[in-house]
Structures are given as C-alpha cells and as structure tokens.
Image (tube, rainbow, N blue to C red):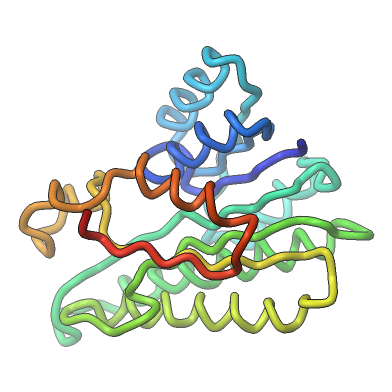
Length: 223
C-alpha cells in the first residue's frame, strides 16, 4: 500500500488512526504543529514494525502547505485524512474574531487548500480523502455556533467533491463523529465528563473498518 497522510496526527483520534492504518499496511506520514507528540506516535508505529515519519506543518498556512507538499512525493499518497481541528465553545456574543478566524482557517481552509494542492500535484490522482467532521456538521448545537458553522462548511465541501469526482478514482469520505474522550476537552468546560464518550481507539476502528465501503460514516458519541 502507499502512504496515508494524517493531519493532527500526534494525539487523540489522529494517533489512533495512524496506528490502525499502519496495521493495514500503509506507510504513515503525520502532520502537525508540535513535534513531541508526532515523534512519540512515529516511534510507537516503528516499534510495532510499521513505517512512519512526520512533518511539522500548520494547516492554517497556505505557504507551509505548498512547501511541504513539494517535498512529499505526492504520487505515493493513497489516503489523506483531515483530522486537525479546533473548537471554541460558548455563546456567540462571547466569541472573538480571533476565534472565528482560527476555527475556519483550521477546520475549513486548511482541508480545502491541502486537498486542492494534492489534486494539482499528481498528474493522474487516485486517492481517498477522509474529512473528520463531527456530528456538529449534521445539526447545530447550543454554544457551538462557530464550531458547527465550520463543520457544516467542511461537510458541504466534501459532499460537493463527491459529486465533482464521482466518475474519477478520487474518493471523498465524510466521517461524522460525536464527542470523544480526548485531550480536546482538557481546557474547556463545555463538556462535564468526557469519559462517557467513545475512546479515540474505538472511533478510529469504526472509521478504518468502514471508509472503503461508504462515503458517509456517522458515529454518535455515546457508547
């Protein structure tokens, strides 16, 4: 198999997807901003007999995307997982413009730019894109207006590409998952007890087992 690129791949769902896709035979390329978690995940995969590497890249930066893609050897990429994401929660009136910009640059502009750059980099592209969206892309939720808006946007992007490339070897999969028990909630009081959510390993297993057979995966948060 070829290479699976996973953004936000150092922790949480990205880390578990990397481990499980490695077990399926993919070479793993992790993308993220913080070197230490990326390095630790790579070492874990290597210790298990897989192949993995990482690159420091901020998905909010168009120039970093373009520079990084030029060094990847994009012809080998068979899977691109848009997993990196941020969330700011609370009433709309308490949100800031900085939070709005960060949310859309990470959750929407990054995946759009990276997908477009990958399509343009390969003469005859044949790969699958998985958009990790959240059930906030299916229905609005109280105190999640910015987050839900960004996820609805990513959903629309994915559904449009499904139609645009339906006669091509490019596949687009939208994965809608509810809350997970990850460090995502460590600095937020939006969720009282994340332990009631599914684990990243459980969600990763469900995505990996389904993405080759369907273009839409829905995983609710409660076990």
